[in-house]
Length: 426
Image (cartoon, rainbow, N blue to C red):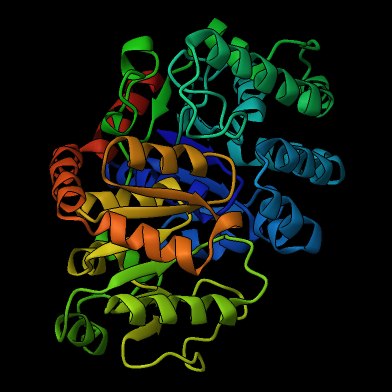
């Protein structure tokens, strides 16, 4: 079976699809993956055949305009920014998605590529499956990401109204580009939303996050939207892409030689002065008597040159699955990948969210009693201190360990996702 996986976005969007692709390849299928140009190397080092597909979204987010949009914390503003980028890239991406999907027996898309992928699957008359890393369809339990303050518990009607607005905005922003693709594929114009088209055709929508994180949602959706859980990258693939392993004795010795540290990983946060943020982390850790492990994901923070001190260690890429079990807690931006890995390791978690699904996951760790949430815009020394004190309370630590047992029991997520794709192809 030939499987095409067209992708765009950041590493958080690509990595679960790489994990799935490796499982499908292990089963004897041919997998062709399309990834943003900055992540093609990541996918090929992991062991898949990959080619460029879509713009470099990370470059967009790192631009001055992108940093301002991220700092504003508005999903709608970011959607407009991405739409603007797509205006210049739309026809090229249309071509790249078609190229990735050529000769495929089944197409696997994500929320970011399912609109184009569906047009291609319709033209080629091949089945399609989509994967969603956060609630991406209308429901009464949760609002459209970024549309309401995350701490609000809005009535069901209000939640559904936010989805109507959000889905219509997406339809309007991308409709003309999609209809150009449909024209090139010999298909009639469409004015329906992607959600409506996928529902009409019965396309499976895999929820690649754990149902334990979204109480009340699985009951609202039927068999077409199965919750399979997060798709983690296997250990051999992590080592192939350069993440540290148990062989990194210096780091592992540091982790074990004192109290378990707090992990700080700010990922794609719009940090203008990384050294000032590192100074804040150092001061708060000294104030609370904590050790801190800082992931140098920030563009201008060099792990070798960072000013730290005896309590702080700055590192480059590391193996979350090996390092997190040796930590006491975690502070990060709230992407689903890092959120899942910290919670699976039983770590109470403080989410410092920016936009899109991150505020949702921040609100959820609070509601589930396993962490705290603050928007990155409001993060300062006092709020970081208060958040760390809160998540290190014994009752929060115990609740986090209890949730970890539920998440670990769903360890067959990647195999279940592959089963569904094979069934769709048949």
